[in-house]
Length: 377
Ligand SMILES: [Zn+2]
Image (tube, rainbow, N blue to C red; front, side):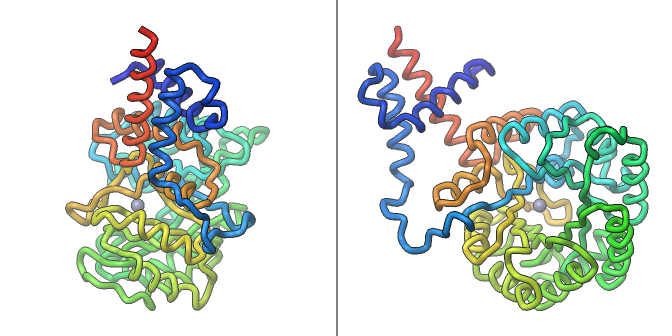
């Protein structure tokens, strides 16, 4: 493992290599080696022709909602400190994240990992132009958030201007997760949303288990479509379609999207995919190509699902960025800084870095750095 300084150097070297193909001919041999290694790595995966499916420039931007500080850390066994969460948020901002789900105002009895959300919001650096939605499961959670916001310094930008609410596509999952039926959950969320909108907060809706449920198995896409409509009707500006247990595949996710698109366009929905069966990235790309403009992801593939043994984490941000950039989309993220953030938080929570793109990119950078240093000897 390289020290941090070495890692920073390796980032610079790789960035230089990627950016300066045309200058390679006049570079020293060691740098030329580095350039050719990085170019070979990219050439192996870059399309030779842009083909007819490339979107127009106005349609190329895909927003990534970075969910690692909430969805990711909430499902990790170890509770991490406020300092670590704040540092993760800082690193994500540095990497270009424009929407970071910062925490959850859920009962600490249910989710001890999120008990310190108020402290995280109060101490994280607020970057202009970045939004920091927080999950609010019920009226009590909203009350706690509003109490915090009312205490904040009014001369400073607000700690957050957005909440996220959630329900699920099956009765059993909703009952286990929130102890009510889907209809009761929608009623409860409508009241929370009304109150939040009245206080000037934006509201984002989540639907869990849209492509499969650990208790009921298959899910009817029409049920998801109807719940999505109800979330929009109550005032959500976007609805995120969560394959919480990661059993979905492109055809099943597209069936869900089609059912939702009967009422509201794909561009108002987000893809929230987990990678349990290795289909997370395929699902994301299929949904983006079908018109979805927002993707939820977590650096290092953090997360899991406590109600579904064996479920792996969220699709990792690094792979989403890599694939989208290769496909001609823009995200506003710096892939190398994102990969470093993913590696850092995986180490901080004591687990393996679950980002294949992140691991591959950093390994390549280190190999190039080692070759470069050896050539200097
Ligand atoms: Zn998730």
